[in-house]
Amino acid sequence: MDLWPRGRPDGKSGKRSIASIEVLTKIAIYYAHKRAWSWVKWAGCRGG
Image 1 (tube, rainbow, N blue to C red):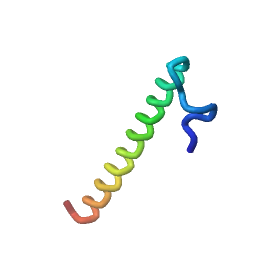
Image 2 (spheres, rainbow, N blue to C red):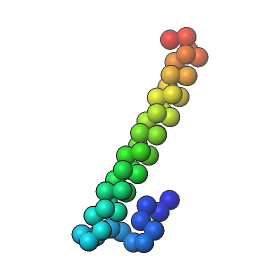
Image 3 (cartoon, rainbow, N blue to C red):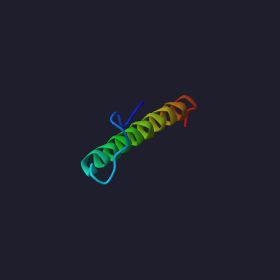
Image 4 (cartoon, one colour):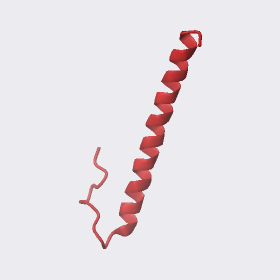
């Protein structure tokens, strides 16, 4: 997945770098939720 389709952000494109940071944050939260859900399901199957 290419976060910077028009090249990496430099000092002139601060808005784009902020947007990419927000995207990375959303991806991190998404993966954290997926891992938490899989752990909850696993714990439930184990009877814990």
